[in-house]
Image (cartoon, rainbow, N blue to C red; front, side, top):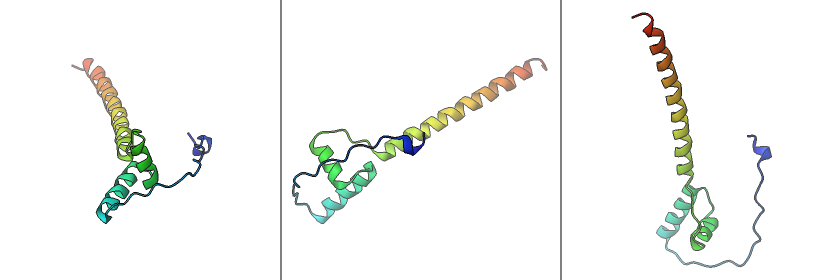
Length: 91
């Protein structure tokens, strides 16, 4: 599906910021986890604070890879079935 036909989410209204004091290591960890989820730090912390499930981009990539493997397996099984059907008449 072309990206032009996808509907874009309405931008959030900016509200009041909440300050959270963290160490440099904690900030790095939060930044890393937000990037893994494909989110901004603010969006990541908002989702955690509101108990919203966070889906990792890595998980979505793994699902796409599994779908490709499933298709490949189906093609191989079809070729095997065809090969076995041809061998029956030859003995």
